[in-house]
Length: 152
Picture 1 (tube, rainbow, N blue to C red):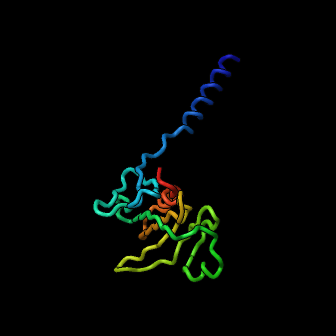
Picture 2: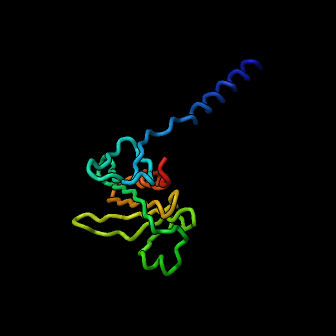
Picture 3: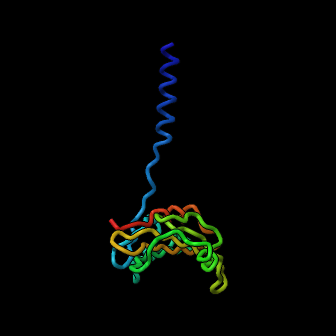
């Protein structure tokens, strides 16, 4: 019986350890005024000239974080959704607007735009624009999008 309990405790400890994964390494990307931020994977490269812009290592995803002083986050109306060429709405609340726009082509490669807004700390909104080329890691982009918020 003791051997069975020991084995059971060993299996339980292994399953516990397997679920304890270290969080992925990230870096903070802030807008030019340090009001808003997103977290991007550590291997993404921030733009050396323009604050608030970063790209993934394969150059398939571009992220821009901005502070928009005069924008108020509120659920989009049906008319606003149609006028904004929303293809897929992920969230449409007073806490977050997150949607995928229709693919656009600038040059030879089509790009899928994602737009995210969250309330800014004082006034206005934090805005994250994500552009993805075919083959981009959408899960990585979604993780970045969901970290948009006030700078810390």
